[in-house]
Length: 296
Image (tube, rainbow, N blue to C red; front, side, top):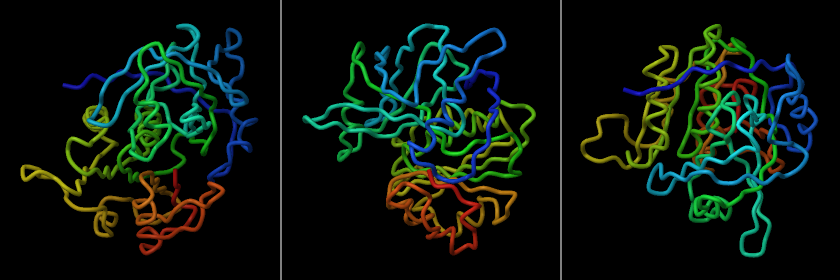
């Protein structure tokens, strides 16, 4: 039996277009989320305008190449300052060079006192390899949040999500935001693609959401499964998208996040300036429009 706690949802008070925004363009917007609460000013750990150092509280292996790291905030009464859908950026010096990369925390903003990252150590990922090698007591510099798009309850009737590997983290942020709000009736379906069953990151958390919330469904796909695997096999196909994703409609949204080859295959890559870029791939073939797809 899985145990997932319910937490209150932080309501947002601003609206931005559904488009990929540059880090610089959203700094002022993200800062507006750090407003005063009813009883005084919130204690917010992250800043969108400067990097701040956070100390590692604990490290846990999630898969053979993925770690869950919990970082202490300045106090138990501090919140991260993360809104949905947003990310932070981490910075470290690796081999004498400063490396900066985006990550999405896997805990929610109302869980105070800590920040949790789930990071896969890719062979060619300079910062990801550095992060998964951190130990208790080490520090990592981070800043944020940087808003991808502002989600509001029931802004879509159905949301489809296609995630590969560590691309699950922003999908979980959005799914938890929706499922833990009883007033939000949005239906969710996730196609979660991995190589083997052992590669499925945060499988317990994903399956627990499906168990607890009927509005959420997950479909696992493995490209190199064991003989005992009874789920879908291969790469995400046009037939899978047609069967499980909500059809093209302005009432629906399909979110995509995964490694570059998968992004190219499903939706096309983002532009060099990290805006959404041209819609391509399977979703274009199936007559989705650029406003009905969001590339993380």
